[in-house]
Length: 324
Image (cartoon, rainbow, N blue to C red; front, side, top):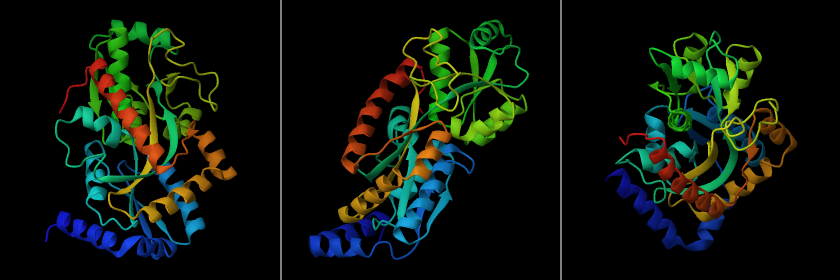
């Protein structure tokens, strides 16, 4: 029996058992540790958020929530694993717009369907990116960066550790007429290591994974890619403030279960997650990493992702990201 057939059989059995059995199952859930699959490496923003969420859910629900990093291939490895997992609430995906909004516009064929293969659980955060340059870059503000980038020979190099940073680089090239060479990485930590070491010129980190290094002045940050300034770095202007029109790239992190997960279990997880997002300690953590709370119902998350996926169709075209 294939994994797909086994999964379909489990869903059919759950449906045949009726809503009473599903509610009874949810009342006792979880009865063993839950695995949180993260499609990016340890040290990334998504990893840090997943670990904080796991700690909070463990306190509420009384079982361990264990983070497992499955980095690579723009999140495809992790998404495929969760899409094929048993839909019982014990394997969840803590992911970003990369797997669910951007990949459908970047990849001609995906081994998973963001809509059909997943049950939305709830949103967690929204987070912008920052325009960062190597520590010895010959400019310390955005205007100087643009001037240096246009004059560079050979062209500057920029790294990407996810589709948000890739889109930031390509959109900046498109909007300003820059020539920069793209260098892909498996995740943000590796890209920032090379930025600090001067092996690439530009990177677009998220505040969560970059603030500590920024405070240590290990690289220079020039602007924010989102629509407003970051509370933890209020002096840092947005790219739009600096004269680049329609430049708004913000990532999000959310939780998903495999399609077919009993609705009472999904709802129990959603309730616990939204309770956690109101906890003062969690709120302080989210503010500290330069993010905003994204608290949703499962249905609201589904609608949010659909809207964001439509935005990525235009973004990929505008940024001239070649489809794979």
